[in-house]
Each structure stands twice: as C-alpha cells, then as structure tokens.
Image (cartoon, rainbow, N blue to C red; front, side, top):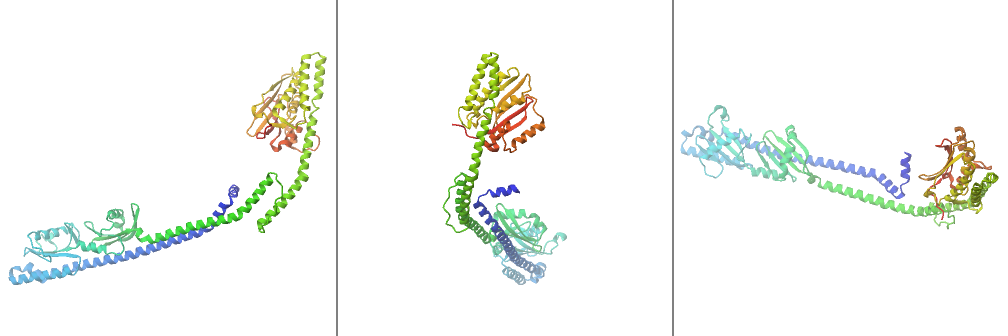
Length: 582
C-alpha cells in the first residue's frame, strides 16, 4: 500500500488533475450510458411488440379470408345445380343442363370476385366429363386428368393448401373418401390461389422487412432480403419446432435481424417476418453516437479545464522549484519579495525569509564546524608524522653497528624518501599511487628489520586506483599496525599481504596477516569503537577511520574482520565515483 502511495506521489500534477476530474465525471457518464441502454432496450421491445401485433393482425386477416373461401367452397357440396349435373344429367333436358351449368359458373364467378386471393375456380363434373371454370380458356380433354392430379396432390402437397406444379390450390372432392371407397369422384372443385396476390399481401406488411409464408412443401415471399431468408430459417429450426410464435434476434453474417414468427394450425403454414436491426434502431443508434460525442466533448473539456488549473498552479510552483534547486546548489542570494497577494505569494515570501535565516545559521554554525574539522584533520595528520621515527633510527643504528653497509644504505634511502614524502608539502590529499609508493618505502625498511621472520606479498596497484585522491598518510598506519600487533609475536614464517580490490561502488585497500589475531568479542568491541564518538585524542586505526569519515562521510571508513591467512584483516574503503586529481 505504501508503494502504491509513493508511486502516485511521483506522478506530475497535470495527469493527477485529469484523472481526478475523470473519476468524478465517470459515474455520471456510466449512469447516462446505462439509462441510454435501458431506454434503447425498452423502445426496442415496444417497437418489436408493435410490429408483432401488426404482423399478427395481418396474418389473422389472411387466415380468416382463406377460411371464408374454404367454407364457401365446402358449401358447393350442397349446391342443387351441381348435384343435378352430377347425379341427374341423363334426365335433364338440354335447356336444364345448360341452365344448370351457367348457374354453377355464375356462383363460381361470384366466389372468385369476392377475394383477391382467388386466381381461378374450376369444377370437373365426372358425369359431364367436362369442367366448369371461371377462366375464359377453352376446355380441353386434359382438364379432367389435371383435376384428378390436383386431387392426388392433396395427399402429398399439404392440406388445406395444395401445391401442384408450383401452383397453390384449395381442393374439394365429392365424395371426400375416394381413397377408401375406391370410387370415381362425382365432381372435383379446385380453387387456384393467386401467388401474386399473396406476394402483394406480404409486401403490404408494415415496416420494411422480408416476409415469407411457407409450409413444408411450398413458400411464398415478398422478395425482400431473399438472400438471408434460407439462412434465417436454418438458424430457427429448433425454435420453430418448439413454439407457435416468438420474436428473436438472429445474426446472419455481419448483420443482426429481428425475426417475428407465427404459425397457423388451420392453414398448416407459418409466417416469418424479419428485418435488419439497423432499420429498427437506426435512430436510436444515432442517439448513441451523440452520446459518445458528448462523452468525448466532456473529456476534452475536462482536459482543457485541468490544463487551465494546471497553469494557474504550475507556473508559481515552477518558480518555487527553481528557487529550491538554486538553494540546493548552494546559492543563498536573496530574491526580490513576491508581489503576489495569494497563497503562493505568502509561500514565496516565507520561503525567502527562511533562506535568509538558513544562510545566517550556516554562516554561524556550519562554517565554524567545517573549520573545526579541518583544524582537527591537520592535528590528526601531525600525530602520525613522528610515529615511525623512533624505530627507524634504531634499525639504522643497529645496521651501522654491525657494519651492514648495503642494508644501511637501503634503509637510509627509503627513510629519506619516507620523510621527504611527509615533509615536502602541506597537502591534505594526495593521489593513491603516491600514498602506495610511500607505503612501499615503509615496507622496504621493515623488510630489513624482519627479513628472517616475515614474508610480504605486495600486490600491484590496479589502474582504476590511479588518480583517486585520499587523505595523506592514511595507508601506512595500517601496515604499521599489522607489524606491531598482528605479527609482533611471530618468530618465523610470518606472512603479510597488502592488496587492492575494486567493488561496484567502493575501492578497497586491505592489510592481512597470519598472526594470532584477537577474540571475536574483542573484534566486535573494536568495530563498535570505530563508530563511537570520542572527543579525546585518537591514534591508530580509530584515527584512520575518523579521518576517512571526515573526508567521505558514511561512504568511507575502516573495517576489521577475520582474514584468509588466519589472522586479522583490516581494510579501508572509499567511494568509487569520486573525482580524480588533475
């Protein structure tokens, strides 16, 4: 949680303002979108129900009209003239016969004219071996065969509407059970339905959409969206088998269609009405487009408004940040007081007053402290200067007394180099390579003194150390400490290793011996003393550690540990990114 808060704090002000305003307005946008979707769904349902009711109304009218035609057709079973022609033709005079035929034809014509869905009506009378029809075409010998075929088609082409040679008929045969009695029909009446009239009726349905009137054997459509009709029916096979009426959405390709289905048990047929959803929701989608335009405009307004506020806050903040950076760089010069009278003006003026006070405190306290540290540093360096003189003259005296002139010459030369390095200038800092050369002079002198007791391994100074500036006389006391304390009791086979190591962010100078060392408790105590503040006189390792801390702060210092040779290992560390001398 703390990490998330820190990440948020690192984000600039402008994105924060934009996100804040967007978060505030997001619930309003969400609520508007939900209300828009609910309204769109409600309108969609109402329009769908309205269309379904209209389709049901038109389909019911068609069903009632065909029902009326079928009932009128069935009344012909009791028609007196038709019965005379069928049963008493032999006793009728020519006049009676002609009159009966004309009366039948007149009633057929009246029935035909009563409905636009009737294209033609014909009655085949078996006793006449002829057909009475409302059409003006001449009678042919094939009419009787055609009537019988239509009759046969009723058993395979559907009831009450029969399909024969792509034509739709309403068939009436008397008697009706010819298949059982195996007798010839007295008459066969066929009413041919007008496919064109049915098509026009489907085209007259309200709303622009495709309509299909179909059964298992025939189909009549209004010709709209014909390429999708078969696909829609294939996708609705299961719902059609389970329900007599429904409203569904069907996706065909990339287009979504709203489908209204209703089935007529009386007609043995179904009506399918379908239209693209865009036709229904076109205007609603326009409203949706305007909604998203409103959202986009609101976002732009939020961004512009946030940017305006950002400018009001950002400019004075930038001035304040520049002043902070100037102070961080050490520039404490006073700026002119701000002429602003708002909150930022108050902050500017109080900040300048704080800077003035801070500069005063630095002059009074910090500068004094630095001067004290520099004075103490020089004093600590002077404590080291005479330390080696005592033993050096003693060694030289012993060599001269024994008349070991070559060794005395070596000692005197290195002793001269040693003290020349100490006294030649008053520099507080020197390059590492100069300090290492000074240590080599010291080791050469000590090799004469302990030639039979101690073997020294002096590693070559790596290139990375060259030019790095360190406090003067900071390395030699480590070697001196190893001789006096680590190897002081060693009689033979003493080993001393002086090494260098380059770390990721530090440079190390180490001195290690194979002496007996000290106990763990003493080692922990000495490490603790290194970091303890002591205002008294300091010498030895604590002296070195304090000088490094004065120079480098927490990034420099001294540490003690167990070495690989079995004795004590002491090393100092300094930052690896400090500047090199010119």
